[in-house]
Length: 81
Image (tube, helix red, strand yellow):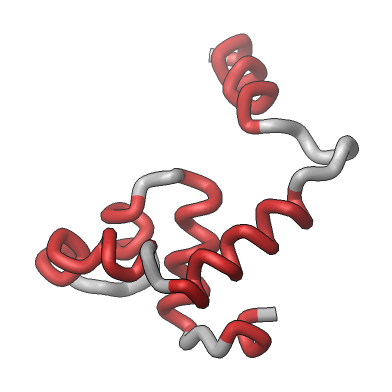
């Protein structure tokens, strides 16, 4: 699917991490960007139309009734701790 949006591997990794964490800076670092570059460019990458479109489509795919919602996961993890 990343090819459909013409994302390079770092952009795809960033978008996938952002979907999980909602933290653009940390997602860039996890994708392999340097912390300095991430601090300066996270919002720019997040604002990229092709990255936003990829994130939106992935979120729609992940929003299925059989997949636990973020709140459910957090409640479970809190209960386990």
